[in-house]
Length: 242
Image (cartoon, rainbow, N blue to C red; front, side, top):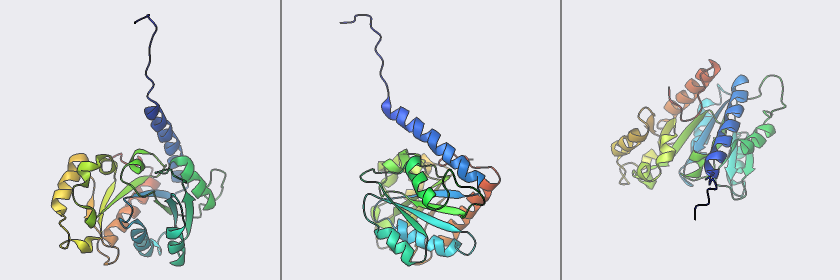
């Protein structure tokens, strides 16, 4: 029965995402002011995120001071692996959360000397953030990075933009990892590019193989170009084209 009482529906999810976006933007501004670029590396478990980060560290390490923030539900497996390769890394254990947000990333930045209270010249030029492995939640939450790097490995199949459109729509660079598997798996690279471009017309899509070295130079150049843009004041945030 309608008793005249006003009924309201409160979209809690929209409110949470909006607050996360505000926190992410504040973190981006603070890092940009110190000349530090943060890149969110997202992809499924086993897509090759850690291996790609190792290759990028080798390609960029002579020119940029970089560190990695590793996010996992549990364990230090990937962090131990990076440290064994001589890469500075900080572990974030999310304890069941399927993504990072700005507050979580902030705790990792503090361990790297980039916390809100830190002063003086920044100790780093680049922070690569290996987000929790999945193709859904990580693309929906703003962790405060300046750019989104989305990975999809060849064995996962070329249909994933149809199944997980948010990830590819939010990407600033799409890397088809494990490209040395092309020809051994039924992955149609051109069909994949076409599906991504429907969602994100201008995004770069490149095949990469960390083990073979394919595409690593192009991806490293993209990161350096993004840092140059940020230092010139152009840091629109992830997924914001132009």
